[in-house]
Image 1 (cartoon, helix red, strand yellow):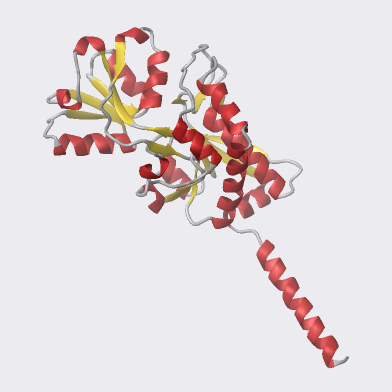
Image 2: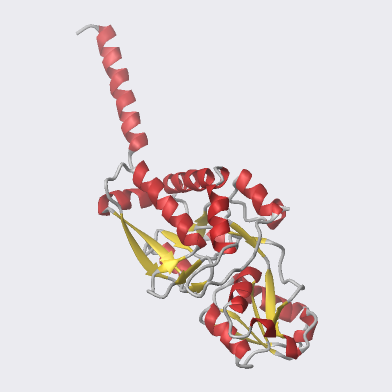
Length: 303
């Protein structure tokens, strides 16, 4: 065997080894390939992002986006079949269930911020919201300062309850803050006068008001506890290979115009199960985000 042949053989072997190494699956993709299944975390009352229909099936804007990601993962792994498992999550359990491997994607209404990015990662932003409060017209509230000494509810495990707690101290409100297990329970507390206000993302408040028995009885505050904040589909931290596939899938969805169609379906058309229409138009900030997808947690980057 000549020296020239040996060198060529060694180079070919090295190249083959490097290609095999580059193609070796890790993390979530490896697990999906081995099990033939992917698990989506869903919410039961985050209308219109992720909620249960009359048949107890999870549906919504974020669910539709997640199913597009599932299609991309299936294609990436060259799978003939990919089983989709569904696992319920709450505001309090979503990050622990992501971290321990129970769910692979969290399809809900989760704010992407710098603090959360220490524990989990997010894909490209699919919605922008701000933290406000809903109250009954009859209560006569006009500003955040009017919450002084009142009972105020927010959902446990959310950025909103943290913002409320911080404002309570900073403004000396002396409010009695109650953590609810989910958004439905929190809104019910305002409905039944056990709390004067419910602090949550404005879009979720709008959907709860629209679905209530007497929508005209409620007002969503102009005052906000936050700047506009991005929602993203959540995935495990440091899973570079999986994030690359997820980011590519969502970027393709948003830049193609298909993302706007999905948005229109859930925010401008009648949605199940009650035929509600939220009438929340796609704003200029989110339009810009769809044109140039980003996973930034910084609210200032979406101006």
